[in-house]
Image (spheres, protein in one colour):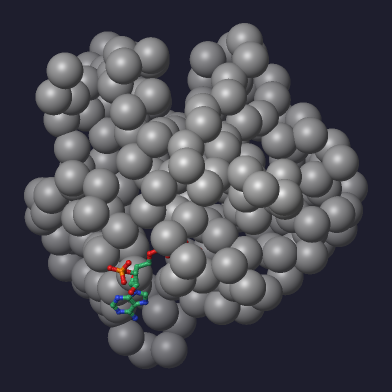
Length: 178
Ligand SMILES: CC(C)(COP(=O)(O)OP(=O)(O)OC[C@H]1O[C@@H](n2cnc3c(N)ncnc32)[C@H](O)[C@@H]1OP(=O)(O)O)[C@@H](O)C(=O)NCCC(=O)NCCS
């Protein structure tokens, strides 16, 4: 299964092993992990390669869809967006994403979420997508709202900051409009 989702400024596709070096570099940025942490590929390039290989295998087996985010003009790899924890019976799944720090606030993820959401509804035929995030992660709240997601609730004090404070985990979702 070859996936390529094309937007105006970006495109999404399966990552390649040639992306491992950047994936490793990007994921070492502490700011990226401040609120959740996309995953931990920072240990080594080997771990990044393994992550990419697993992502490709899972796409092939329709278990999850972790895609790379690329800038259209340069083909530069910028981050990832994924659809995972799939509940096939109820056609529900979770969306998660991150962009390398140097590319923040340029509109890349807003566009990525919009085109990915459309793909999940139109091509994968899922019924509901949800995302959850740390209550202080205001950028996520903003981009999900812009992509049509709505607040469904909050899990009170579900996130332990490890600094003696618990934070709410906010849940946003969207139902297939097609
Ligand atoms: C969240 C993240 C993916 C956003 O990606 P991005 O490409 O920078 O997003 P965009 O540029 O498309 O949009 C960012 C929006 O958030 C807004 N924003 C950014 N920081 C904000 C803040 N502290 N408070 C309120 N809004 C904020 C921006 O103004 C922009 O909105 P606008 O276009 O209306 O001005 C990126 O910051 C990231 O990778 N963060 C770390 C990983 C993470 O938290 N992932 C989500 C886990 S659930």
